[in-house]
Every structure is written in C-alpha cells, then in structure tokens.
Length: 428
Image (tube, one colour):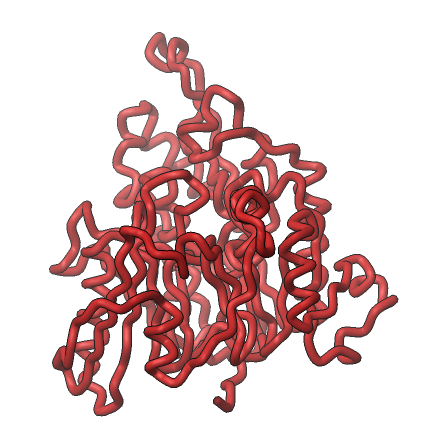
C-alpha cells in the first residue's frame, strides 16, 4: 500500500471507498465442539464452505471499493523491528494469562524470530502448546496462543467515527487481541491518516466498560445509534459520550441508545436488529424495535461540551424522525412473526450498505429478501456480480445476496464482516 488513506466515515450509507476485511483461515478449523463455547460459538464451522461464502462477500466488495486484508496490513507493520517488538509487548499486556501456560519467554522469543508474514499468521491463527511438561501434557487446551476464531467479524474490534478510529473494548477476553491488532494497524500503518482512541488505559476504564462495533451505527454525521446490551455496556456508552463532550463542538450531536435483551445470543449487537439501508429506509426486527416492550430507548443531545438533555423516546424510529430522519422500516422476515424470529437468528437484519440504497445480505433469509424486493431493492446474486453477468452500475437500488449456510452460524452478517475506513459524504 503506497497511497495515503484519509480515514473518514460519516454515515452508514455513504458510498464505500475503503474497507478492512479478514478472510477466515485455519483459526476457524482450530475450533472443536469442546472449545466452541469458549470461542463464543454455539457450533463449529466448515472452513471450505465458509471460505467460498466469504469469497462472494469480499469479491463483491472488491468490485466496489479498495479492500484491505487484516493479515496483510499486520505483516506490513511487522517489517519494522521496533514496531514488531511493540506489538509483542502489547500482546503480553493484553493477554497476561499466557504466562500461566508456561514457556512464556521462549514463546515470545519464538514469535520475534518469525518473518512478518509468519508472525502475522501466528497472531491470528494461534500457536500450539508444546507438550514438554506434565502441566502442559495434561492441559485440556491445545494452544499457548489462542486462535482468533471471531476475527472475520472485523466490525467489532474497531470502528471508524468521522476521521478517528475507536478501538473496541471487548466484552469477552478471548477477543482482546483483535482490538490490539487493529489498534496496532491504525497506529503504525503510515498510509492511514487517523488517530486511534481506546478506552483501555484511559482514566475512565474499568472491566465493566465494553464497546463493540456491532453496537455503534452512524445514522448521520451528527447522530449515533448505539445498542446497550451484553456487548456494549452503559459504561461503554458513557465513554463514547465523554469523547463527544470533550470535543466541545458548537454543533449539536445526538446519541440514540437502544437497550437490547441479554438473550438469546442473536441479539448480541444493535446491527442484529437494526441497520440502515438508504436515506429513508432501514431494516428492523419489528418485535424489538417497534412493538411495545420493556427495552428502553434513550436520546442524549450534546452541544459545546454540555449535555442538553437526556430523555426517553418511544422507539428508535420516532427518535430519529424528531431529528429529521424519517425512516420507512423494512421488516426482517417480512410480516410473519415466526419468519422474523427464524431469519433474525441468522442475521436477517444485518445488512451492509455500500452506498445509499445499495446493500448486501444473506440469500438464505428468503422472506427478508422478498421484503427488500417489495421495497424497491433489486435482488442480485453475488456470483453474478463477480462474474460480470450483472453490472451494479445499472441499478439504482439493489441487495446483493451472498450464500450463507456456514458464515451465519458464527453469529453475524455482512455488516459484521466489514470495517469501513472511508465513505463519501451523503447529501441529506
């Protein structure tokens, strides 16, 4: 990479210009039924099928924007020996428990001896435990350095907010290294013009302060929609609020916060129940977003370093309408409750926008895709885009569908698998 990239994202729907991806590798195959729960999975994935499905996802994005792979970006910064040492130091700080697995210093020396490409692979795919002591021999865990099973969901560990990158403070320790790697990429890639902001190490940090990118949506350059649940805590929302207050902008900024259920696991993030599709359309899981329930919606307005108001709203859509965003909802699963439940479980509300009215999602969610078609979005198969059989420039609105039998079983959709770093601004 030689060209300077000015990081900037001011909406969920601006025309995509740059995005970071991670193609799933052997870290997925390093999962077994015994360690699946530890890896935050309820099942194991077939890598061959998952790779083919991901090829469709990345292939379409490669036709639209500049795509950057995590492993390539990581290997690139590791070519500098000082950066390499700093990344290893950050690894020890974020995963002090590896000391308990024995041979720590030998492991660190082993990592430092590797080429940039091999080390990048090890940091993502893991390092197997040497069986050279009774403790290690009897251990029920096979890795001195754990594989990052969830890393193909690049959205969670970092998120672009305007021209800065907020580093995720992960709810589960097994994902801390993902945040460390993403922060290192943004800190040390000279071509990326940005500043990283992390709650970890700040005076506000506590173990209860969690923020993940699946919960942070930029509705408009002055509006954030944030999910508050098991992955992004109230202290996490307060940290984001504190960053906005510290900027002391004259412009009024808004946070619309939606409480999320702690279970089932399909509700882990806001983008599993609500995503933006166009200037005037959104995808919703209607039972949670629009029907009366016990989960609160709160609106916070900020100006010049002060909170103007904190008040409850009827729901997310009414809150946004008051702010000038009158969104027409498209229902995940269509108009039948049973279909909505089934398809939300497999990321039926999790769409990724590559431009206003131009989105990507899973083909398996048939009732949701039908609802999208009825709302004016032309369904187009990913392989037809990749082969050139369909030209996206010929369509004003579309939904590109990728196969999804394995990837959704990891617990996320197209938005989860992307980390945009640059979008064009939207004229509202």
